[in-house]
Length: 213
Image 1: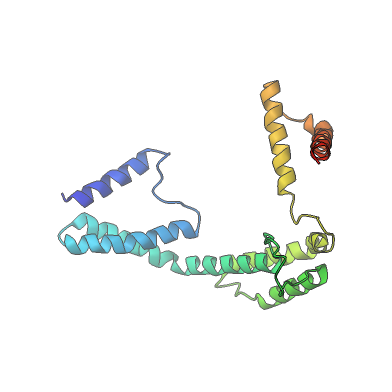
Image 2: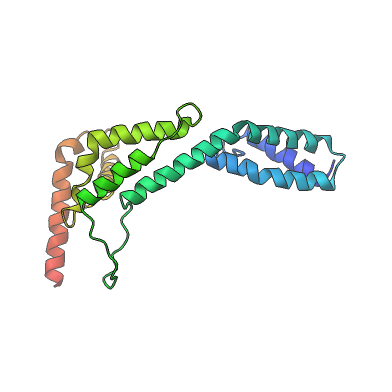
């Protein structure tokens, strides 16, 4: 048995027997791209060791998986590109402002809404052959119709963030602190008093900032 074949056998055996050592990042394109990277490496090993039946069978299995899922992987990759285009259309995440930029565009809700409507109109996947893109288009269209207007206030109100990630992070810290001091998993009390804790923290931070001026 060649050294490379021995290492491959051991790696697969460890991955099968240990939950903490998974062979691939299963979850769509990442797993497929790993397979694509494995294929040429197996071909190189097979060229150097043409008599290895194990490598021949393993290479055949990898090629079969790639061929079977090629269409779906391509569909998912294009859907991911449309998702990136949607984020670019919403200018999310927001880019840092450049004061000296002469080409800065003033964003407003009407401009963003127009761009989103054009993107949805231009996004026309084939439902029969492109299920991932179709699912993304249906979800995007349904979400935009239901909540689109509520997502655009941040473009008209200065200082209003486009998301609530910082607020969620703050409540996450409060929940962890509540569990630590109470020893209980439930943090139901934060539903009634969490906002007051945040207001107290904000007042303290504001007072400190004023004092340091």
